[in-house]
Image (cartoon, rainbow over the protein chains, first blue to last red):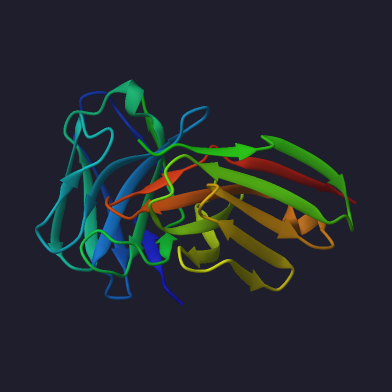
Length: 115
Length: 112
């Protein structure tokens, strides 16, 4: 079974802190994604990567950056956390050619609260 | 811009009932469509994936159909159980893009 693992289930950070959310997948997938999920807004794509060191902006990249130094690991970075970044963050991976999806698999989510 | 709509937003049924969840999308140029289940506070679990060339997929009590020309998919759940209670999300992958576009989901409650 594909396994996508996010480093934390729950995280509480202070405003202005630099926050790292880590995601690791064990199936050699090319594509990796970061979404955030908010009530009434659904899932929105922040960033995705289709190869090591490659990244593309999604719908809401402002205030975020990403890093993919190794194929299995995709990190989401909040440069200076703000209260409006309080959300559920979901990582996903999929096999496929550049950006084209096969079945996508999600991690268990990280509930981030910024105080 | 692709938009995905799910109807109904919420559904409450007695145990044992067969039910249908609906998903519609505005742009038929899709690569595939995927149905997910999400339990409260958890991540998404993949249920079924339908490629654009396929009409349906089945897994156990679940059957998903796809009519690409009309921009519609349905998820049929047979003999519903309380354990089926969750939010069900559909998502489409564009033929030309790089991302999954999600619907808002249907919250299902199966009463025992």
